[in-house]
Length: 505
Image (cartoon, rainbow, N blue to C red; front, side, top):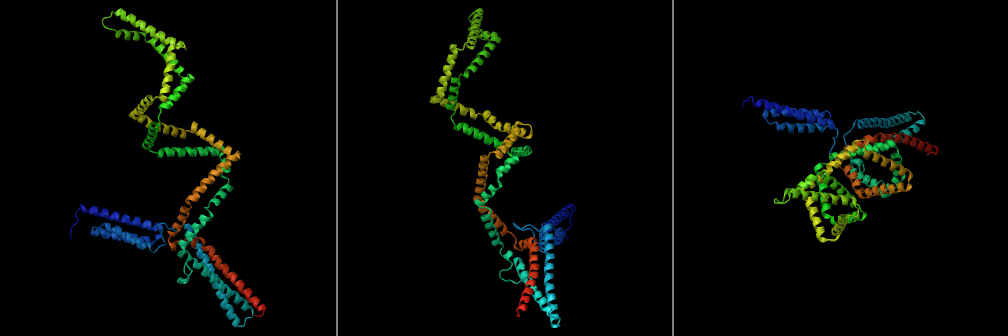
């Protein structure tokens, strides 16, 4: 026999522990789905298999043995939750089943009582107890017939009576799929038709109720808070890189596809016509005059520095001073004289440039090239992409701040909408029409999907488990039918026997 080394023993012990842990976890899962105490037998089998695996060194066999043991344990319990099937029995379902069993005991006891009374009255009749025994025997006999008939009818809904494959019995298990299809058709015809949906929505008066509800400040505050939370959640879920790429692509594509020169020309022409550019000219002249006064030495130095080297310095200085004075005079006159010739030249230039932007092909082509080159620059693309970040931060901050302009305006809009809906009948009619149209569209478009969901769901249920589930919900009332059948049958039998005796039959 091969000796186990000291290094191998801890590894095998760890494998043994892991196998037992997996087996116990599988046992708990089976127990939770309805395997009951038998799930523990599966766990025991798994632990034994794990021990065997430890002895043989095949730890993988423990998982398989545990699964087999758990499966055999689960087979003795109640029906587990199957794929697409009805859920397992809840504590409420178990309480209903106990109620059904109690009612079955009472109904069966009524049948046995009728049988006992019938036997005793027949014995008393043969013993010469008197004519009253015939009445009691007739009532008891008819009660037994009624009880047996209703027992058969109730039992035939869920299973074959006494296990006999009698035709048209075990209706729910055998006709489950047809019942599901019929239920889907019933829902589609009676609940998902356009007329039913429209009439129901019109009777509810959604817009009127919504208006009255929104008109209350507390409700408007609540809706505003919920919308703010939803907005923050949506902005949090969205990935910045994806949104930035979409925004950048949308802006770039739209700017590239649309020629901007004609629009700029029209805008510039309107500005020149209205005299809006004069304020810009005034500002430029004022700033230029102020700059010249503050930097006169710089201007004169620049002129003198650009003179030829052979000219005398005093001549360069005189020329610089003359140039500076002429520049200052020109700018000052242009600032102070609205009808200065230079202003007229600016007006004519801007007017001609506006016309060229609208009609000159060369000018328009140059503007388009400049636009495309500008959009292609990385700095511009980064600027466009950063727009989303700025907008998102602004929206998140506004949504979180209860005193932000966004939330204040949203609350005011909701209150205004509620008041208008409550007071304006035409608006209510319009909103109701929109809601009805949307609901009818959804119903008529997806009716088959909704009804098929019902039928396919029912078709996926386990027949036996479904029958037990339904019986747990309605079985108690069905047992009352058996009791009523016993009582009504006995009364009918007594009445028939009495009538027959009165007429001498």
